[in-house]
Length: 285
Image (cartoon, rainbow, N blue to C red; front, side, top):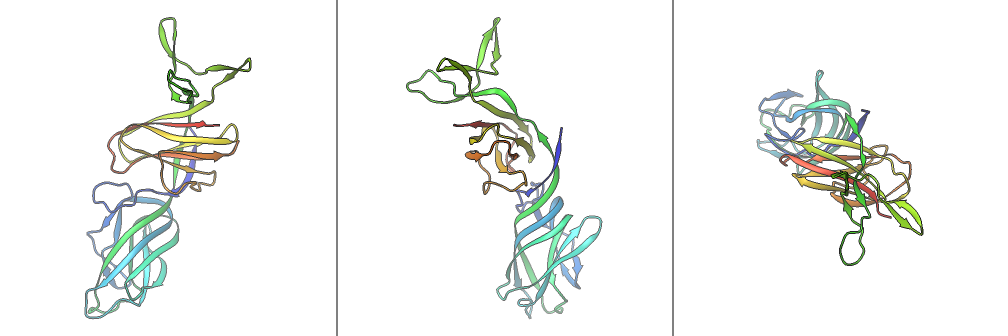
């Protein structure tokens, strides 16, 4: 099975003491940076090749002096190498600042912000933090899609004519066998129904599965998840791993180009129980 070094914004960066692969919490261990004591933010597991981070910082004075309006530094803990200063910024007088910066493809496990120099023992503060996004690169297997499990365009026994997505079985020799092709007569020519590309997925906990899809023709393709249990979220990317829809979805249509490479992730939602789904892709035209 092929693999790719997939670069993407990891979807779950919540505060959590128990769940979440890259969820975060406040460390119980104090560290010293720039001569200042601080309790850093730590991730539940090492973040692989983190190239960008965006988070909101909020500092509140608790001492007799102020640490606002001063120069501060942002640090990350590079696993195996120690603390590394990423950037310097001026903390506004209201104590609120958004860090939005490249990092450098480091494996990191902790982050921290402190004044650029020790402001003195009378000046103390509390930290507030909210991580909005982290961009990571990890090696993921490219899972294969199959065709023939579902058919699109089957006319069911109901009033009117409607295209449906259906599993079709036929009786062959007394056994029900799933059909892999259905031909319809159009102007005395037998034409195959549009193929449905699909994949079956069962996961126990937070997991990312990656699929590659190359449209056989230009068209409007429906990409949907048939959830049997739990919660699997879909995200769509182009060949450069640029996300083509802002956020996740369960059922959307996209104009896709013949021969272009698209990547689709099916992600087990952080707080969901055991999940089972079918990913389904088909041309609606």
